[in-house]
Each structure stands twice: as structure tokens, then as C-alpha cells.
Length: 279
Length: 296
Image (cartoon, rainbow over all chains, first blue to last red; front, side, top):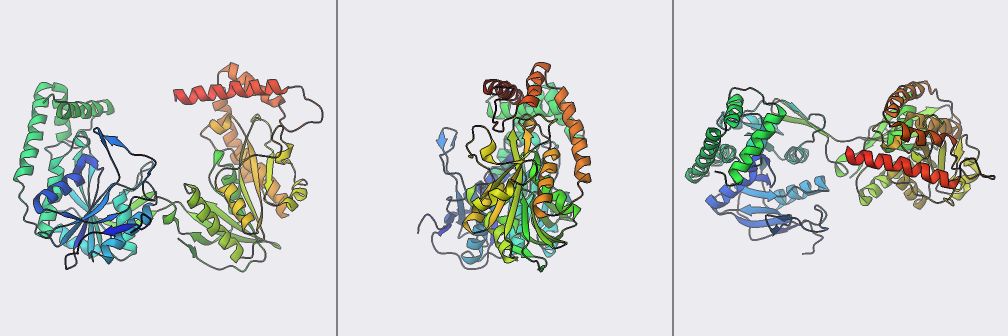
């Protein structure tokens, strides 16, 4: 293989026509990475293919995060315990988006023989962490909607990109898949804005529950429930310590919008409390 | 990567006029106004997904209906015995390779239609005052066009500009298209409408320069296009510019006002404003805007 080839394959593929689950590394509330980490821990996924970064990412140098050098990764994973799904876990490319998405679908269709794809992600919302979560879908073929509704997914969303915003890479992928006749579905869950940078295991769990039901994965959520419980306890503690934070979260629970400064304070205090060791 | 044809017009040696967004949208406003005024018809477009990230998504009842990209469209119009093709793009592709690919696609269509001449239009940032009529800097890609361009109204060549010795550069697709056209044996001219250096820093279009471009195109193409729509737009924008101008501190406005006396076109006799004066005026103006952008 040369570095000019866009993709490479590792190992033998499992028989059948799996569904491709697509996750991007940066996501509101870390929903998609949370889902992928949980699936990998639970079902033992192994790397089975890769899209080369050349041409899709800036390779002028490397980023450093948490003291570590980072490098763009775009990998496929398979598991013998879940043969009906293949995972694609990737950083979002910075250029040649259409070519990149086409390369993903080429490998998915030609090597993994996938029959459909699901993208997963979080959407920032002005809601509270204990308020009911909504999982909603965007499909590229109408017939996909019926089955999704049986898993409690909202299937009737209307949306138009707002001025100043851009479509998500997941929407772009679903559109490219539609052009190629590949059924595709975006699964989204709302993430309270103040958990967007902190991580939101509850949101990840809601997506996992849909995938568990849809693909009969037999997932055990006890470990994830402990993580959720811990975060909720932290937030309770913060609310007890800070009357303003308590008031803001209660306002959100009642559907009352916060001012910009109140929202900023809430997000900052939660991030400092959870990540800054004040809990 | 390709071109989608909606119809195949029968044209005779059409001229192609192309524009992309740029400083003050000078070129784009000129070309798009001309296209609209003559009611040119859409006949082809470049498939945009290889060049651009989408701008908007439309989801109805949970189904992804459409995704919108910046458009890159070809139009045509027969005006008397003159056939014209317009290429109007909503965005410039990023990076050299993508630009080169797009330039070649535009020229593929031009050559397919038997085109022999292309024009592009853009802005030339110049030390002029906004109350002055913008001139046109005309830059061809073939030497034999120089004598023709000398007859254009209100037009100068690069060699007419003091200190440039006929040199300069045109950034983006408005220049690249002409370079690639030269490579492929197609003659072309870039018309750059002057935009005052301080206006180029404002978040506003500059239709005054677009108007000058259209006046030159009228002459070059041998057509007579009504410019009243553009004149109205220029008036409206002119009013906004005056309002912005009033917000500039008086001491800087004083420097800017001295641009009324500056002529950077090479003179036989030295003018009232010396080269040193010009440098000092420009330095003061640039420093003000640099400071402004840091504070913004």
C-alpha cells in the first residue's frame, strides 16, 4: 500500500451485511465517543480498516492535547460478538469533505458490504440534565422511519439550517449516502448546554439503548449507570453549594430560558466543578 | 467532479464573463447585474460538492430533503449579434488545486461553446477617495490585447501605475482563470475596479467600482446596457459609506481627504502631492485601520 491510497483493510471481514455506525470524535457532550467507548468495552471491537489522513487533514504539524501528541484517525472496527454492526470512528476531516465521505462509503460498501448506516451525535439544548431526553432521527429514505419509531425515537423533526450555521458532517454523509442509494439515519440526542464540554453519559446511554434494541446487542448498562449517578451527584452537590446554579437549573427544568450571562456562568461553574476537582 | 447541463444553447463565438465573490464584491456585482439586466438564461452548472462544504440542510418530517451548496452557474444571452456566456459563482473554492480544477471546468464549458474571449472582474485596492470615480485596471493574458485596451474608457494598464513597472498580482479565481486560459490558448482580460483602500476594510459592497466595470464592458462588448439599477444601488451604498465615514476620527478623515489630490498614475510632470506625502498619507490610514481591526 502507498500513502496515496485513501484506505486500507486489516483482517478478514465477517460474513453478512452489517450496519455501519459512524461517530465523529468531537461531539456535544462527548455523546458519540461515549457510545463508541462503551461498545468497544462491552463487545470487544478490533480495528479492521482505515482511511489514510493524507489529503483530508492538515499534516503541517501535530496538535497536542492533555500533554499528548495527537494525530487524525479514521478507523473501522468490527467485532465477532456483534457481527451485525461495523463502527467507523473518525476525526472530522478539514478538507475534501465530499471525497472523504465517499471514501468511507466506498470501503463500507465494497469491503464491509454494509446495507445501511447510522450516524450518532449530540445536539446542544437549553434543557436540564434531569429533564426527559429526546432521541430523534433524520433519515434519507422514508421507509426507515417506521422501525425507528418502535424504539421511542422521534421521527418527525423539521429543521432548516439557521443563518450563520453550517450543516453537520453527519448530515452531509447521509446526503452522500442518499445519492448512492445507501439507506442512512442520523440519531441525535439532546445535551444540556452546560454538559456539552463536560460530557453527558445520560445522552450516550439514550443512543446506546436505541442501538441495543435495534441490533440486539445485549448491553449491560450497570457501569454506565454508575457514571451517570456520579455526575448527577456532583451536580446536586454544586446546586446545594451555589444558590444561583440551583436557580438556573431549576429554571431550565421549568422551561424558562436563561440570559446569556446566566448561561455562561452555569456552563463555567459546572465545568470547573466537575473537571476542576471542586467536587 | 463535473458539469451538469440544463440545456445546450447554440451560440456563435460567445464571450465569457466570469466573476467570483471578492473584495467589496466589485466584480460579482458587475457581472451579476449585467446577467440580470439582460435576462440571461441558466444553461449549466458546476457540481459543487467536490469544491465546497454545504451551506444548509433541509429536514422535513424527519427526512433529509435537500442539502444546499454554493452555486457556480453558467447563463447565456444573445444580444443582437453578440452572444454572451456568464459564469457566476457564490463562493471561491479554497486552495490552489481546487481553484485550478474549477478554472479548467469553466474553460471546458467556454471552449465547448466556441468561446474565443473571456473577461473576469474584480477589485483593485487603490489610494483613491470614495468621492472619486473609480478607474479600471485592465490586465490581459495576451500582448495583442494591450492596444485594444488602451482605447477603453477610464482604463489604465499596470504599467501606468507609478512604481509598479507593469507588475502586480491578481489573487483568487478572477486571476487564475485567465492564467489557465492563457495556458489553454484562450484570450482574456481581467477588469479591476478601483476601491478606496479604506473602503476595502469596511464590510460593505462597492457598486461604484462595479459601475465602472460595466461601462468598460459596454464598450468592449459593443453593447449598451442600462446601468440605472446599479446606479441606484451605488447611491444607497454611497449613503451608508458616508455614514461610516463620519464615524472615522476627524484627524484620520483629514488624511483620507488628501487622497482627493493623490494621483498614483504615472505623470509626465510631478503633481502637487509628492511621493513622500503619498507614503505618509497611506501610512496614517493603514495604521488607523490596523488599530481598528485589533480593537474590533
